[in-house]
Image (cartoon, rainbow, N blue to C red; front, top):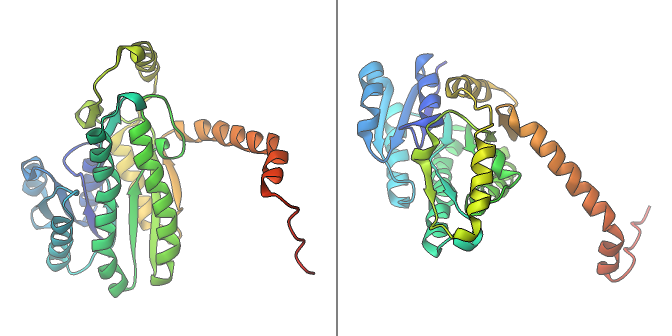
Length: 278
């Protein structure tokens, strides 16, 4: 049976690839974008299988209205993909209050509004799948991305709690953590006002970014279909080849550091923990 999808941030990049993959196999999609003109080609190609919705995910009332329209149009919601978002590029010292608030309003709060709007429908129908598009940057961090990492680390924690809260309703949650993809990323990046003290770091990071082997968005779209079709999907999954190697070292370093400082951790407890009764 074909699935009904609700996908935010469908105008370009991975979101567009997710929508195209679903439509190409006969699923139906409520696709949202700030400007629905970007979705005209999809509507022309797939007709009534696409519901193009103008949506700014930071507008909570508009999110609820869009989810309601999708449910009314297609009768159900099977897969909800929170993809809308952008990257904030700048050192922590460079971030303005507006920079950081805007980043969180889109990447975190926008996702919360979609989840809150969709859950009553998913619960009523007895199941569904919420897919949160996080990032390798949701489980590790690099310089000049503090604002972006803050939004994605928050999304990771929120979604891990969510998964436990909704499992009893038959609702599944998956965090997809993509690496770098050939998506025209500059269109989805905001840069903080530069402080020259960080120019050298920016140059080093740009040189590093230029060495990355970026993934194919169409392949990510096909992979997402497998996640959506899985009877037992993962809570977390990397998309691309970069994540596993990066995070394996990061987690090894964390475990080593915690172990090295375990004596101090015990000292900070203040007394010897009681031994549980047999």
